Length: 311
Image (cartoon, rainbow, N blue to C red):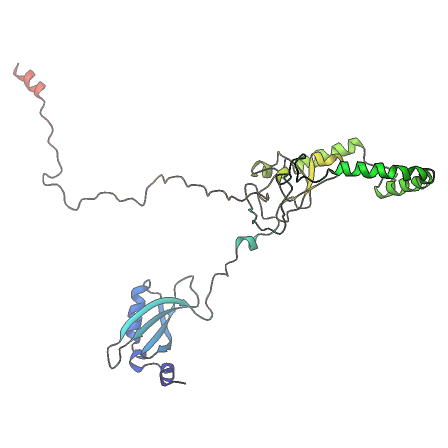
């Protein structure tokens, strides 16, 4: 360990005794009456000492005024370095900053709120737009799927004829198994009336006339978080898969919308406050000296009345 490091641990005597100088600097920087007792001294280096004073200002519990003083080598005059308000070991501090993307929780979104999604959001992936598919008659176009199926069907037609009789018996059991898998072997199924009643109920809860949909930037039909439904309901409804949306896991109308739309990348501009009725920030002219004529303005003589008096 070097000698300079050893000396830096012991406060300089003249700097440590400059408590009055440090207090005067703290009182000049702070508001009147908020400087408390001298609570400690720390050596910052050779002939550099920081004095700490208790802060009595409301809202700064545990904070301390730190005044650093120093003196030059072989000099007896102590000078002021800097004055700053610093938190102490038990100071009351603001909570650690957390980005909005981590503070947001499901259910926090309200009408008019927008939740932009990142370009690399793991919950979304590129959809099929058809822009990269070559025309059907192009030389780089792949064979049509229907054409391939037609050729394969023609090749298998001869072999299917031989097993047609045995396939009839096996087909009866296959139809029953498929019907059971699709849920068609239930005693009762949803009627058209029941389907319409459910659709009206879902439209009322998560439809285009709700306040959330009225303030949404776009409809659910263009949202990447929409999960399509099967059957005739997919023409008007889907399931929301955005955990931050108020409709997460709910059946929503394609005309519904919220601020969690996958393409809501632009945040709304903050509202511009109205101009103040009473301008308390402007400066009014206030002359320090009255005008030389006393501020009175002579009234012009009424020449018409004088003419009437002489007539």
